[in-house]
Each structure stands twice: as structure tokens, then as C-alpha cells.
Length: 402
Ligand SMILES: NC(=O)c1ccc[n+]([C@@H]2O[C@H](COP(=O)([O-])OP(=O)(O)OC[C@H]3O[C@@H](n4cnc5c(N)ncnc54)[C@H](O)[C@@H]3O)[C@@H](O)[C@H]2O)c1
Image (cartoon, rainbow, N blue to C red; front, top):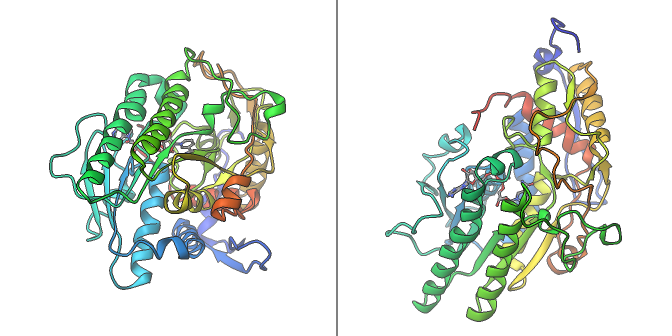
């Protein structure tokens, strides 16, 4: 896109955008007027709460700890619980967030701080737990740097959060059990990266695949600490009979993933919103399946509340598996429809020599286990997810560089 061209995004507020509500598979979608980020978020929260009616019904009066709640996944994990509190009536869920804000204190989280059902605690999970720690019924351990650019910058901190921080929380679960205040559910966020670069016959990838991972490469701080984290979870679950579960997310995207995160989708969107061509730092051939965040959040809560002890679940979508180049093309096309964007995709090597080292060529999950055991049923299409994301980013184009 040439310099000095008028940025057509400014006109978005005046547009009426036909958008399909995310619906349960098989039901007709209702055309909606979609005007801004808040509308997107409200509809997503409604969708999440609707799909989790049974699971959330188990939560009145419960105390939930979310570590790393200031991050991308925290955005909807926290807001969906608070939303459910508002609509369910009666006794709500009490949510506590521990976060050291190494990636910044997001404005959306500080703006929720007056909510009586939310307690924000600045805490680094690699240290001892606070002495006045509450009795938690559920724990979601999401504290870990997840963006490759940042975990390569802070590799030891990343390992510590996934190993030492996790261990501290698992030991808390043991103590709570001994003192007759047992934790009822624990979710550890692992990653699809534990599979490394799967061999072709292991794609799509089932939970039973053992992986093809470097233990010393630039991504190893992340992949290997998640692998050891899973081993810790499985053995604490078995040895102490604890309700510990593991999620393996496959490429989530959407609202909450801040534009400065340095993962590939926000990088592309930043180019679009700044009115320039999309810069792709690879040849565009690696393929992924991209799971819209609202569907993924439903999966995570289902694992937390219904998952089998000591077991891991892939959470993502099985199709479409598309190349990064095709994904960028879809972003360009949708931004063209929404905002009149006229840029194109250009290739340029990254200045970071490790950018592509150990980057998997293909990533695509099998999700039959979560479907069958948990009733996980993602239904938001890629086109709709991209559309919703772009509208959200249009109103969230500024974020701290952290
Ligand atoms: N988003 C995805 O697609 C995806 C994919 C695979 C795995 N995961 C995993 O899910 C979890 C959450 O991912 P995300 O995308 O929200 O990450 P994120 O980087 O957006 O957020 C992580 C949060 O953890 C906090 N944090 C980091 N180290 C901490 C520490 N030592 N103590 C306390 N807080 C700390 C950060 O401040 C941040 O708020 C991570 O464990 C990540 O590895 C996410």
C-alpha cells in the first residue's frame, strides 16, 4: 500500500457490517449488525456462557485462581466468568488473578478492578505463594510467556513459570487435600508445541503422539518446560490422586491477543491497521489450523470441570489447515471488505536470525478426544473469526510494547 494513501479504516464506525453470530452447529445463523469491539466481545461472551451452561452451573460460590490472567487467554477466561455472574443471579464465582505483568498490565484488566467478584494480585508465580492465599476450588495455571519473540528473550523466566511455578501450585493442591479443603479442578496450559515438528504420518496429531522436539534449540525453553510440566501434572495426579488436567492449545487467535504481542496474526493486523502491506517473514508455506478464541475458551473450561484426571486434551480445530500465506490473503480480503484496505502480502526475511528455527512445518490437531469425552464442539468458521478479530483490533490498535 503506497505511502500517504488515505486510511479507509476511519470510516468503519459508519458501516453496517453483516456478521454471522457464532451459532451451535446446524442452527441457522442470524445476521447481526456489528459495529465495534464491544459488540464482538459481548456476543463472544454470550456464546461462551451459552455453550458452558452445564459446566458453569457447577460454579456458584466457588473460588477460582487464574495465574497469568493478564494475558490473551485471561481476557475471555476472566470476562466470561464475570459475565456469567451477572446473568446467573445468586451466588457468583469469585475470581482471583495472579500475574506479574511481565507483558504489561492491560487496560481491560485494570478497568475491571472495581468488580467485587474479581481480585487482582501482582504476584510472580515462580516465587513462594502469598502467605494469605485463599482456599481455591479451581486453579487455571496460564502464567507463562507464550509469544516466541518474548520467550526467546526471557527463556529462563519462561521455564521457571512452567516448571517451578507449576510445582508450587501442585504442592498447594496436595496441602489443600490434606487439610480437607480439596481443589476440585486444576488446569495446566501446555501447548501444541510439545509435539514439535510432527512427522507427516502424525498429522493430524493425536494426543498419543510423542513428539519430535529439539531440547536445545531456541524454542526449547518453551516446548521442553511444557513437556516437563505435563510430566509433573500426570505424576501429581496419579501419586496424590488429584483432579489435574492439561490443555494443549493449537493456535488460538482473536480478541484479547494484543496487537503488540509479536505473534504472527497481530503482526499482520498491525500492518493492515497502519495502512501498509502485510510483511511475511517466511515463504508462507507452513500450515496451521487457527482456532477462534471463543471456541477455545469453551474447550478449556470443559477440561477444567469435566476432564479426566491426569489427562491431556488437544484444543483447536481440525480444519481448514491453511498456509500462513493463504491466511494472510484471507486477512487482506476481509480487511478489504470491512475497511476498504488495499494492501498486499510481501515477503521479507526477519532481522531475528532465530525467527524460523524449529518452527513446525505443519500443525493440525485431532480433537476427537475432547469432542467425545467433553462435548467440545468448535463451530466458529475461520472467515467469521477473522472478521470478528479485525473489528476488535480496529478498536484496540494501541497496546503497550511489552
Ligand atoms: N494463546 C495460544 O494460542 C496458546 C497456545 C499454546 C499454549 N498457550 C499457553 O496458554 C497460556 C496462556 O497463554 P496466553 O496466550 O494468554 O499468553 P500471554 O503471554 O498473552 O499471557 C501470559 C500471562 O502470564 C503472565 N506471566 C508470565 N510469567 C509469569 C510469572 N512468572 N508469574 C505470573 N504471571 C506471569 C504474563 O504477564 C501474561 O499476563 C500459556 O501458558 C501459554 O503457554 C497459549
